Image (cartoon, rainbow, N blue to C red; front, side):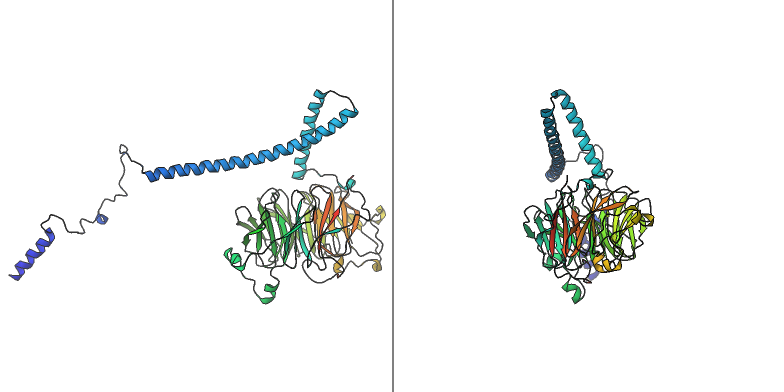
Length: 514
């Protein structure tokens, strides 16, 4: 009887209660269906109705696309307005010059109208060729000899030695950094200064910045060794002993981003002209490429066997680097190749482009070298360019020239100069963009101006500008009307010399052009 009752209960449980509802079973679970609903094909004739949410998403995506198009149009319109304003400015200058000629010489206006348009086209073509580096502006012959009253004047004061100076594209603003870790933004005309404030440790850590290791490194971790300004003037990049690259907004003076990656102090920085591409050189012997607009790392370049000291870049993706391994490297980034130039000096200290095919370098033996891409050795060498001489003999006759295009600057009597001291090291060199004027600085009490001539003639000295202290950085105005120097009591990368009488700060010297 018990067995019969158990069988009846099981059967009733399988059939379910009298209400007609089925009890859940594995067979009725859709998960175990052999035909998946996701894999079920939709017939072509079957209509699919879109929900309200899908319609809203479509409209939103269309609105975003339209907004992006409007932004692109706005950027294009801005570029067009800038170009039109520049064109109108040139037209006004040409018109004023031609009206002055018409006053002196009577002529018909219709003929003058055609001449005016051709002159504007010639000026625009000349500017484009100068920007690309194919033509040099002849400024050296126009530089007038400075008078005693036209010396360097202090524009900005720093508590410690200034390591780097940089000028904006319009020559109206400048930036300087010193060994005390301060970065100052200043106006060229008025000298009004504004200081950049370092972010807190929490903000730096959120950007991926790492703490410097060791008490000695922590104490001097905020020493700034290098600065660079983008062509559009929006970004300022700084690097120093903390091994990071810091990106700043020049409009608000706020810290944007910290780029970790280098394993040694960041000794040099440069932006590629006309772009937001940033190149950095470090004591870890590497060169890294960054994008300031996207806040992103791009690539690393290798090749140097010692610390990278200076770096320079023009409009092309070619990077010129100088290292303590007596070598200067020209990296061709798109081709992923490089050219190596060996200097006869014991160590190179600085270098910069003249144009895409020529460049200058300064060394610790007091020499300045003129290089060409087509030759692995210097085309011309000026020896003892910053020797501590008692009587400066800048102009030389032909019989005083040495072999292989080398010339000796100053007296060769040992008592008259001390070329082996740190004071005569060529610590900074700069070229006025797309021109034939260069400047070099050391610790011998002078900044020297040079005229860059053809490869057959080399470079020749122009004038010397008195200045006490170590000239750690130089920057030419794009117009060539003034020269900015970052001066300190100590050299940029060490403390092997000291001038107590020197002023730590930014000094500016006007250049009169005929």
